[in-house]
Length: 456
Ligand SMILES: Cc1cc2nc3c(=O)[nH]c(=O)nc-3n(C[C@H](O)[C@H](O)[C@H](O)COP(=O)(O)O)c2cc1C
Ligand SMILES: [Mn+2]
Image 1 (tube, rainbow, N blue to C red):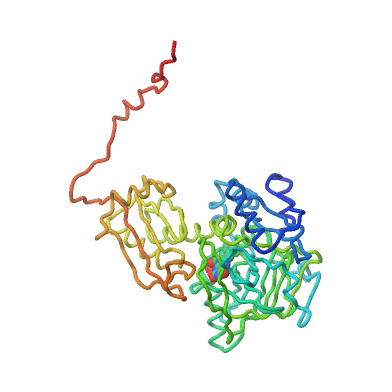
Image 2 (cartoon, protein in one colour):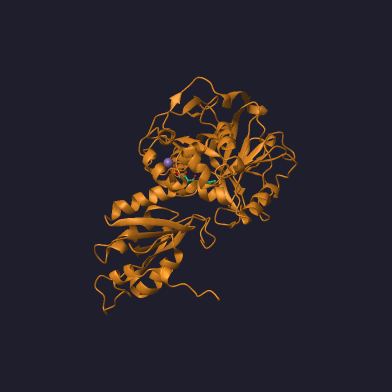
């Protein structure tokens, strides 16, 4: 079965050193985050199973997808093949299979019986809100016009027995779907899924056209149909049968609440926000559910998103230029693309398309094919040596970016963006050449000849 607990067992069997069980009591406030931060400082990023979290009866599992090695294990490929395997399988969708019952509904709590207080009170960073968060919350909603379902992660601030805030960035599919409900004066039915197999997580992060059924993408990644069961209070929505915990309810069309601050994936918190409100009508879970958590701003947060962001960025670039060679995402909101350009205007066209396509594409640097886009020293050398800033830096004001960027001055995420064309001019004003050596001479030199003399 493709669920969280079988994956943890697989990791225990196949990568034993990757799982750390913590039996002593830990505090949900700061301590689990501090443990992950400290391990990361030492270059370690294990899957952590906290069996005794203060104030909570349930086991808390964090950092499940905190390494490329574990994503590779989930996909059944090598670390180097993760992105390509994701891309290949995401393009071969497989529809889910609806089943009558599943362990995610072992326990059903409705109405007055719903109490988010049974969840651990996870708080991560010093300047965060007092209220605890659910960070591994996958939100499922249906587009009221097309009937398509969408899955995406959204941070949820617990604000009472059956209420949370929900952060939906502008430009994401869920925000677009929500806007349609608001325009009709209706609440948006949602199911919030917590505790899933890594491939369900990767498929959730897939971002393509709004017409794509994301359950089908998950099926593609799994190379098998995902079993889903209808919700108990939202019959239009179905959730993975093997999920650990599900919260069903609505995002109301006419309420907002104060949310945050919350330290984000960028390493920064950007203060208080105003978000819509999620009202929980039913809570269903496995008898002894594992509470899945993602420590904000650490490895897992970044590793998880990488295959999907790389995939959609690559697709955008390939659609605009035929001369695409490779790309890398070496820092938050930064894309470096290598092309073998056919004309001097190509980098500008690529930059404009890429900045428009993605709220997380804030800075795009275009380099020639002989530059490794993942090697920032090579990239910055190209910027320094091939760019004249008055001609080859393209600045676009008032684009859709993300308010999670600490330099962004607008709550709705409107932001300036920049593209740098760091490719060599095909028609240089002055002649220049690259330093070269005769190839046959280089080949003839045997480095073994040049050894330091040993003292006699
Ligand atoms: C751990 C984690 C937390 C996330 N939290 C949020 C969030 O709070 N709000 C949001 O809009 N996107 C969040 N995202 C990003 C969305 O999940 C992602 O952009 C979305 O799946 C894209 O799919 P879409 O094209 O269907 O919108 C998060 C991603 C991860 C990995
Ligand atoms: Mn989507």
